[in-house]
Image (cartoon, rainbow, N blue to C red; front, top):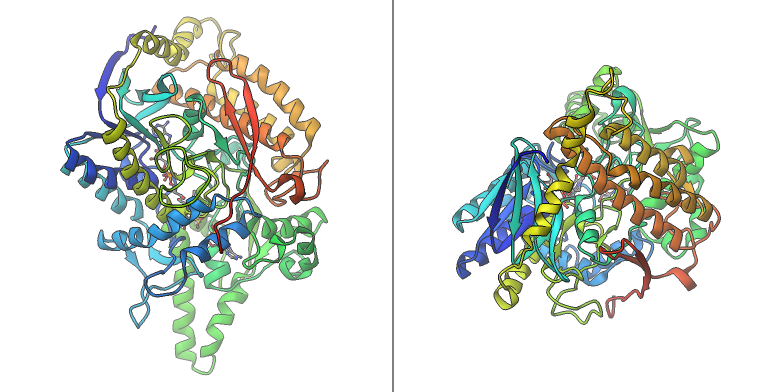
Length: 627
Ligand code: SFD
Ligand code: AMP
């Protein structure tokens, strides 16, 4: 076995991940931990300042309820999420986040985030729930607060350590193992409670950007399904694993569209100029009652555009120039004011990308796009797993203690595994929390985990013999490389190992062709899913044969292994749910209609970590009384 040092870290609370939810968890947990003399340790595979989905920054805060000013209520937010997710949401969790999220946003502002204000000093809204920000340094600001909180409580932040597996003591999570992506160090974290906040997953499906564009995706390439893998391997019940997210974005560089639709009131049209939201309005009747809610659910907005492209009406375009001209038109009688407004709008359009998707600005520049003069192509991206946005996949967590929810078995946000909490993209069925809601949920879980430690926390019992086995398994790819890489003239062609990139292509091909990726027009069926699962068995056999030439590739190997679990949970859940509920995200072509009578329920799944057997379950939907 590769001769790596084993580093043991003892802590009370272990936070896996360093993104928005983990920073929220760290900030809150450290506050309570300090009072109780407990230690909080946060571990991120990257550097906290620029890790996760918000690494590049964002141009908006997508969840702000505005309770203080009477703009909306938390109940309004429940109705919004219920509609957008076609009736499938954990209303207790959505409510819990909604009632706390505003205070999180106020903290962001206090920590230095610039939120746009109008002349009256009120926040500038992009849409009903969204606030415009100067967000290039959004992540740096939120990370700084988490760092300060942990430092003040005497905790520890460990960067560039990739968490792989949970450590278990029966049905209790007692820590995690991982490895440094820079040094020859294998880490063992022993903890009384663990929070999984390692984001969602990308590159499970073959992306549109392949070849020279590989690595570009809407969802950040560094989140590879670690939260899902970690909770599945711990034996936790998972939910909504079929609810992937497909955003529509500016094509090829994945620039955001929210500001265009909501702030600039832009239209999206087909190549022949028809506004698919108007032309295809009648289709929404087929998806009642959700097809008729406002705003129209994200998947149905996608679907109407997809119907255009399927009928040869693509490409689709965002009418940027029309939108800019419409806004500036109110100044048309004053040429100077008109010119000034046009300049202002033009710079807002570019800033939207520069704040969060710099590559889209580069692509516009490279293709001589002037948004004020000409429209710009948009397209549906490949599928992603991001339960915090408009998808819903994640672990099944316990609801808030003070609500009459039927989903309560322990501490708020604890999974069905004792001592293991999930947040952000890691917790399911609580969509539309976005950056601010993920942070708020992290705070809720951080406080709850400390409560668990105070009331139930026992010294973690870790079986070091088991840890040695995990170390050998995790470092095996380095051994395979050392042993066999000199056997062939081309190191990439070898019968004794395959490289992570090769494995990734195989996984993506299976998902793309059998589970409804881009190439299949997002359509799948029972037979396709079953065949996909057969191929997954063979793929998993080869997973143990991945080789790695260095630290970086070792990380790639484990990212792939983690993606496989996300992929399998996804196929199994699509197969189990015998209907099409989210056209525009995926289509069960053999069950093309929504079936509320049989399938207005959560689809949950659970893998037995000992046997690898999966159990599929239906769970009832609870709606908040009076909402
Ligand atoms: O509008 C390991 N999101 C947006 N939210 C907004 O509020 N406004 C926007 O403008 C947003 N836009 C947007 C958004 C997301 C993406 C991908 C894009 C654009 C392109 C959503 C939010 O970003 C999202 O909801 C939150 O970030 C979710 O928080 P969290 O904590 O669940 O995930 P994370 O922030 O990505 O952090 C993950 C962390 O885990 C680390 N990690 N650490 C150790 N071991 C491992 N094995 C690990 N694997 C991952 C990561 O390094 C990271 O620290 S809009 O355009 O849609
Ligand atoms: P996006 O850039 O698509 O992620 O959008 C940012 C925010 O605006 C998210 O909260 C979306 O759900 C919302 N959004 C985007 N487009 C629309 C639309 N056409 N109607 C309503 N909400 C939208």
